[in-house]
Length: 225
Ligand code: FPP
Image (cartoon, rainbow, N blue to C red):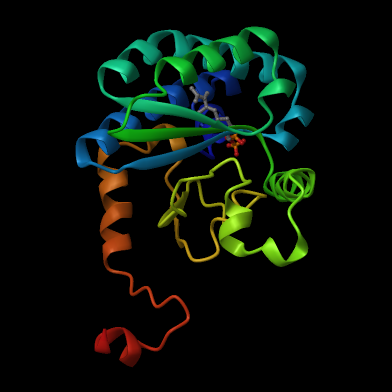
């Protein structure tokens, strides 16, 4: 969800105003995805590297998260949206940790859509954690496989992302879902996250439906299926 800071600065506002507008965009995008029947949506809200930001900005982001959870968890429950956190929840401040755990348990039964919030998340750390958890589970080397490995990631039980959207002109993966995005389609847009609304989402989805996904096969092999 890139571009909050620049969006605010371009308007002569403090960066935190960009994050507030970004939180509104989160509401819009979640609502539209639910309406469209998109079963899984993941938002990268705070990376393990984001701790390096100024203290005031980090604290403003966590306040926004708390406010978001307070308002949205009851709505998510009503709308059958399950909340899952990808990342090190234990490393988050206590109020956010508590609200997230509460949100996850209140929506655990919801099935229409899964909203993954990547928080205190880093893709490399997730891979190392999965390897460690497999070893701790006592798996023999012969039991290791890509499918088995995926069971030890934060996204266990969920399909790999079909589409990765990065806003605000950035064209990097930035340690995001490194294992899971092996075959994802990438969509880069200059639109800043706070301006990423229903129209921009539909444009990204239109671009995705126009892609030809071959998963390593030739077009002839795909056509023959
Ligand atoms: C990146 O933009 C954005 C973030 C690091 C935070 C995203 C957080 C929110 C949208 C709000 C809180 C989250 C939820 C789920 C309610 P940037 O600050 O790097 O922007 P810049 O690239 O223009 O500096």
